[in-house]
Length: 231
Image (tube, rainbow, N blue to C red; front, top):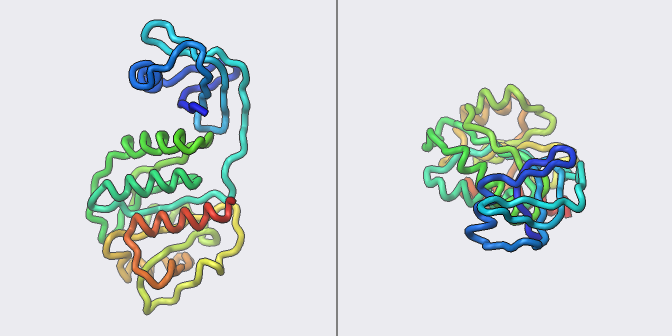
């Protein structure tokens, strides 16, 4: 399946401008080739590619609406790493494994204060197309951990940290949930003050095993754990 991004409104389908250029100039696709367009909201249009000069269109043969998304839905709030390549790698792999939402988390030890979120969103779209996802994940702006917790449900929210002296539950103890949120700390982990703050807000702590994982590895681990449940 050759999947591209665009807008789908009723019977009207418009291929994204950047996608059109990619189809014509990079992929050098031809008239009559089969093509599929998704809006990232669970809708999929299929049909034949039509090229008119520098414009690419689709002659629609079928539109499927409200295709099922992933369940359970996973939301990871993760502190951006100093080397942004690592967080980009996490986003690519987590998207491939069905993550529903990613929030960039500002903590005491977060070294990177500015993030090009639009670039990350484009990478999430690219990873979604690559893995044939019809529901694109939400990528949220950088937010302080205190503000993030204002909109979370403690019954479905967990934090992974490396403080061995503090109580942590095993992943296997997490009950079956339709929605689940995980907080992943920065390089150097959450501070004990932040862990106490999370505990005071009834956020349960989880262990990801005996090894100390990098921030992006911990995020990928949680995404893979959830993906396994999807299978």
